[in-house]
Length: 86
Image (cartoon, rainbow, N blue to C red):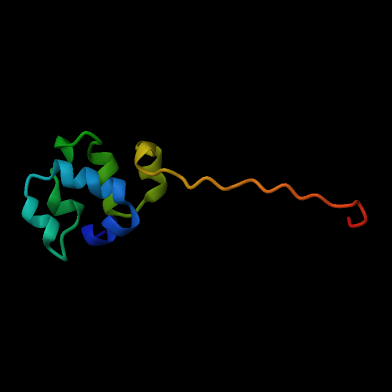
C-alpha cells in the first residue's frame, strides 16, 4: 500500500511510519510504501505488523496492533412500537 493511500485510510498507522522512518524524503514520494520507508525490524510494531500492512492484510494488522485502528462506535437505536406490528 502506498503511503499516500495509508495516510488517507489509516492515519494512525501513517503517523507511526512518519515517526519511525529513517528516510523522511520517502514520505513525499507518490510511489513510497511501507517497504521502502521503514526498516521493519527496527520499529516498535515489528516486522509481522508491517508485513501485514504492506500486503493489506488488515485483519492481522488490527489483531497485532489494535490501538492503531480505532473502530467507529455505532450509536444504539431503541425502537419503540405500539405492539401492533410483529
